[in-house]
Length: 313
Image (cartoon, rainbow, N blue to C red):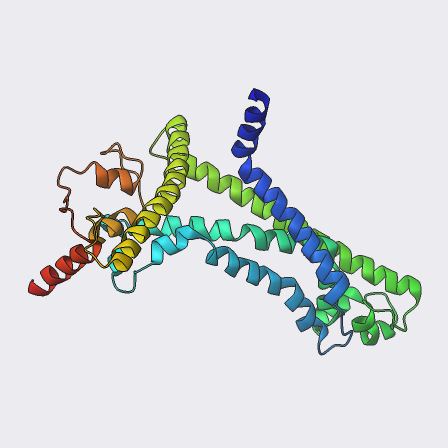
């Protein structure tokens, strides 16, 4: 049993690494499926560039949008900001909002960068795109010291329909692939160095020590885990209470529940300050000395009471 717990603890501690590894495998598999199943270079000057660039950048753009769409941190930051723009700058900390937004964007860029790296290292999409360029500088670079037919047949090089000799065609293909792989490694190196510098800067500017930062991360994980569990439990109790009141045709039993302002306060994005020993907006709220504890009223009574008070003001 102890060995099983040790293994489970190891996987839990390495879940980010495992997740990124799984994402990399999915990216490689997806790129191979796109290449073998759906990608067919048209091999003409008018369409090669647009077609190859679409397959190279299109999936990356889709992965970026999906990464942002499924990031709960983004929606926690922006939900309700049209009605209350001050949510974007809690306590006047607009710079903190920009840092969080940058962190969210960088996290969403992991999958697109993986796609670009794999696609460029493979080289198929790049070969099709570059062979369709009509720029004289590019054509002169590829067809230097070659026959005149190279200019006319350059767009057909990725296919087997080129009239060039086999050696000349293979030389161009190897040139295309070498350039694509160089760009792929440049993307990988840039991403790795950028991630390293960003992590170093973030840790250097941290307001807490390494161990306290580790504790903070663990606390946030456990708080989210327990919140999800208790939210299901309380939602179930509230649903049972309401259904019981409806079917039995009687007054609902008292059910203490946080009011709207409490939900708004704990939903705000948390920024650490050294003046208070809090690790989340939830802890900051529950430790307030001026908290408003409503009487045991129904949820609708509390909500309607708040709305009436706002109207009277």
